[in-house]
Amino acid sequence: MSKDNTFTIQKIAKTAPDALKVLWREKILFKRKTFSEIKSELEKRGYNFTDHNLGMALKDAKFLTKHGKRGNFTYVQRHPFVERDNSDNQHKNK
Image 1 (cartoon, one colour):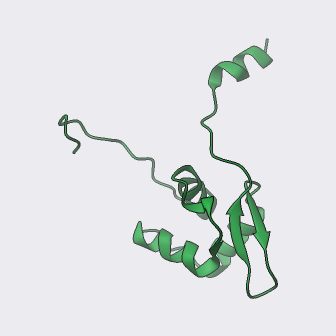
Image 2 (cartoon, rainbow, N blue to C red; image 1 turned 90 degrees about the vertical axis):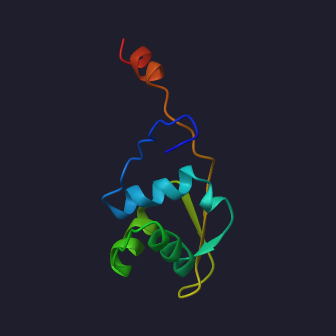
Image 3 (cartoon, rainbow, N blue to C red; image 1 turned 45 degrees about the horizontal axis):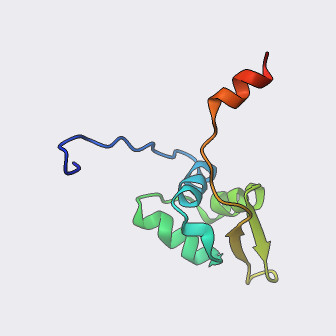
């Protein structure tokens, strides 16, 4: 509960790609992180994905850049997380 006695609602990530987006949103991926650092950060939050699932999510994440050589990769965000503005989508659909 916060100071004003209201509950904050957190969205639970049910997949590894969604969990990576949580880290991106919270600016955890602002600096380069290794696979093990990312996995550890997710485990602190209660997420326990297999290495394979997390690896595939890291590979497919369009908002991350991979640096290094095989077995020694680091990952960092390509750009800051920005909430989508639904009004932009409404204008495009007209």
